Length: 573
Ligand code: ATP
Ligand code: MG
Image 1: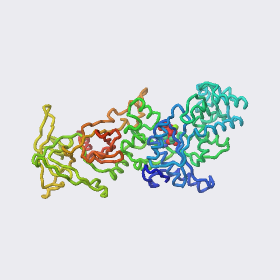
Image 2: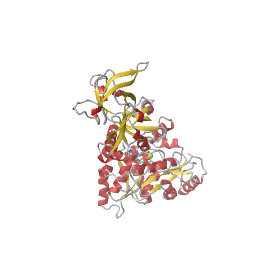
Image 3: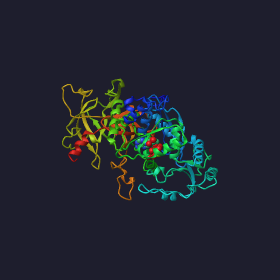
Image 4: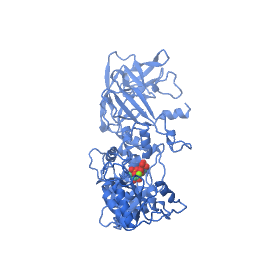
């Protein structure tokens, strides 16, 4: 694959980036029959810069870049920037960053706005050929004339204007003589076509708006449907892959290309990626950001690539997921658990292990020599011996998680409780004896004794314990804020809401939980944004960019699968 960006992830293997079979077969057949002669396979990824990319776009990116690469071809990144009111440079920048982060590098960086001049010339050509006309109907009237799926449309009274009149009016539209919305240029095709897209679609609208690239040079803008196919053609895109909702637009794109006699791009449609508990629509995602339902586009609960990145997801796992989710010609929905599975799998292999106590409970080891401290050696990643080991400080006062102690243990509870012996990971066996409570009756301290002969985590007499727990030395611990994320929506289909309601009704009020008092082993003070950790027995975590020297913030990417929670659920606990 074309991957020359040093910051991006290593190139995935072909199997991992090309989920398609029918798309590949389609292209392979065109290559075999030399449909495009000596021309190489050329694809494009064509985002509209009106929002940040989401994981649905990742699927399109993997297909566009992955398939071109398989055939030794190239992929352009093209911004479909025909809608100046909704588009911004911030989006243009974020999209480039996200495509690279996912591991792809484009051949040419293009903009539909680069073609505004050519598109205008082609509009004149269509007018002169009697294939386009200026219409004075309002948007509402045009809608009323369009007809329905079962009824043909009716011709606009302006449909049969002369070529001269159309040329004159279109030139004056361009010159800025008319207010917004007063006239449009339409293709003259067939108001009775069974395909509504062919019923004299609008080509140009009047819009006195500044464009982020062309400034005030234009006050008429091409419609997406007039710009998209010709942009493909201009770039000699051989295979223009897009989602299924554009299938009905394909005849229109072909009509323009045939009328103009230009390079014949082939469009092929595939299914959109949909994921349970997830909304993948920029229009909606913008709403969440603007209404502050989330903390920005890169909120770790967002399905945006920037949100997933901040959450700790990796480009490798996203690509593997996209490939596994597959591609077909009918829309379906993929379980979010599948994405989580591939992410856990990836992190299990690469994440450094560390000990962190999210909800600390102090344990005092009464027979540990006062003032003593020692270091125990711990493997950085049991899955990867090359990751090495580190020294973790131990002392007579440690933190364990509140969940790891019960004064009165329920059945099958094997962790610490009075009289019970457990292993402190890589350190010693300890046995609990008593607790100290505050005035409200909360346990604030547990007193234990340890077995000095069990250093390293095994007792020479072969004694067995049923639980191994993580811990952090009180004197050496660093404090951090921990952000726990859950699904953003409470329903598998967030669009399943009552009549008159909205997707917002299904937002999960508990999607973010912030823990301020977590205690971490001291090595985590050196964590970097790109580092990935498995906090032992807790989950996968990464540093959040909100971190400062004085205050570390970690995001939970995903919890580990919690066997105990399952047992508790089963027993109705
Ligand atoms: P949205 O509905 O989220 O606004 P869009 O289709 O309008 O998405 P574009 O910027 O036009 O967004 O999309 C660029 C490309 O990404 C298009 O080719 C589109 O088909 C593809 N794409 C968008 N969403 C998905 C998805 N969920 N699954 C697969 N491909 C997608
Ligand atoms: Mg779109």
